[in-house]
Image (cartoon, rainbow, N blue to C red; front, side, top):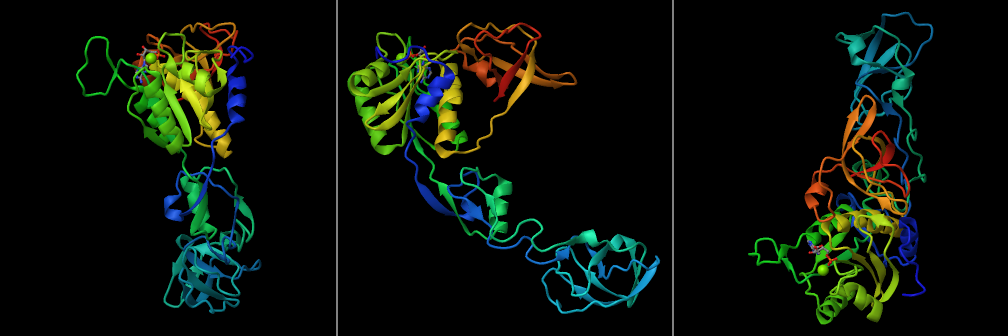
Length: 401
Ligand code: AMP
Ligand code: MG
């Protein structure tokens, strides 16, 4: 460890871990299964959108006549439904066709008047206003065939899934979800529901981290909590490396006598960094166990969440080259003092309220890094840079949770 940086910045930690990404695989999914996934290749349109000129309104299609005087009576020569039947109806001067939204424009017609501005008689229609050429949706006006409208790395939001279908793709190439092992460590940990003896607590990190892994778009693989022994830990990490693409551990990375994650990684694994300048959550570690990337997250429940958001989420986004899940940073005014430091980034839990004067950030609660309730009730994390003032009235960046 001697030649390795000591307490690096969050940015340095991100760039070191980015150099060792997990292995990615591509799968081709039916379009109905691709929502929320990340596109693995650029997608070009197989068709023009729209594929033909069509009506944007229910109304009458006719020829635009600059000389006409309104109201103006036209002869109705047919009905054009969205199915495309009767497509051959020709519209001449003085004629109109009843048309539905999305139906192909009849040959000869170039303008539409919505039905609300028409009076319909037996075989004629009275147009109260001039018909509008802009109610015709032109072939290819949204997309032309061959245009790349979605690019590799984009997360498939509902609108993007709709666009895949519009472009004619029945299957979509996406990155396989990564299998991410979650190994919590500590002799004191019991599963929720079990009775607690003195000195024991409920294991909570693996559940919270599993939620964060799902939020990131990947598959959590929770391991049973591991006791603080080198043998148990070695067994769990080796199984995790064999079955998963990335390993997250919680606990055992600080300076305690039983902090075996750090020890085993130093003695038998490969540590790329340990400890960064962040409050809370300073002891994280990154490296390789049997060629599988591993983040050693701190044991304190708030710290493990915060470090996931600052280190693991950006790592996963970088690996897939993706724009999701979207994280919002907003400017907010501090309404309570937040203790900042000269060398660490400070992430305190705040609640955000939107007011006429902008976003306001309150820090109403006890903020110990063991207090998961302070995170559960928060809507943001302060992104106070080293040396930045955390006084009341300061405008700061807040990460929206
Ligand atoms: P450690 O880093 O292992 O010393 O753990 C720091 C603190 O976090 C201790 O108070 C642990 O009891 C607690 N802790 C560690 N792992 C977990 C976990 N999985 N769930 C809840 N608390 C934990
Ligand atoms: Mg521990």
